[in-house]
Length: 353
Image 1 (cartoon, rainbow, N blue to C red):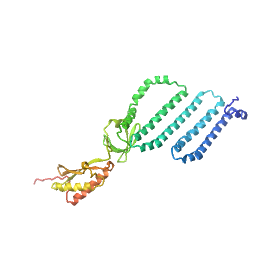
Image 2 (cartoon, rainbow, N blue to C red):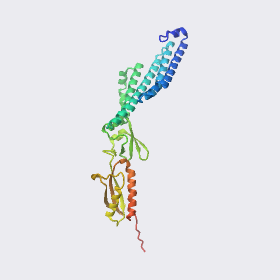
Image 3 (cartoon, rainbow, N blue to C red):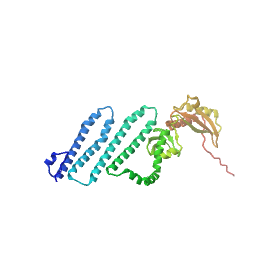
Image 4 (spheres, rainbow, N blue to C red):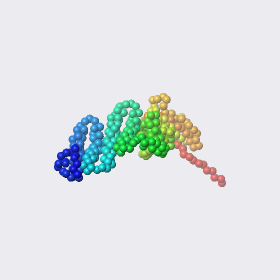
């Protein structure tokens, strides 16, 4: 059977066998795709690398192989044309793959623009709202492009959306019920961002007591790195409905209370003066502010000790452990120098003769 190829009329005159024609067309497009790849890597990328922005470099990197495969698929589509294949499923399958690849390129482009341009713009603004919204926009853009690709694929396969949606109505309710936890996490994420509960790099304390730094806010969960270098992944739905202490708000200043006990018989005024001097000699403790000046309070007469509280503010909550360690170390050394005993539990036992 001698078929006329409108796109390459000379091929019929050169080769009469349709299978050889199909093979030659495929080889031609494979060659063109390979040439495109070489030109892409040797020339186009080199030109893009000389520009000031990195957006074109990343877009070229992301689209290089998808375009290569799209050209090959186009070659396959043209190659099978002279074979007079009546099964349209092959054509529809190829078109489906092409649409999916195009969707991937669009998502890569949007993510690249958000990562580079979006973050640069966000860094210039004083508000942290845009920094938190960017990851959410990235996730929503993937969902949006995915829906568009799905609709196009359904159209390729001649599937009518109206009856499909009607038939999926009850099933959709069942799926929504089954996915209520995931949907709750997504809405929880939106709630956390809109309420500005916390942002990346904030240190928070969970209702369960764990303390850590926010390292990522996703669509379904938030990642928290504890001071033990453990990574906690907490569902956003849980965070949105639980009690959270944000140590970074309203500012980095944090109030701390350290208890210290001395032996009975110690001079209370001397103890207060010694501990207060210790607080004033530690870097990071707030001194100049009258409302936040360091205090030493005689708290309680305990069973074995006279208990004092060291009340002070630190300039950066992230230094709480280092500063507390320094204060306790210096306080212990100063009390020893002043011959002020630090007690420990004792028990006196009387024996009857």
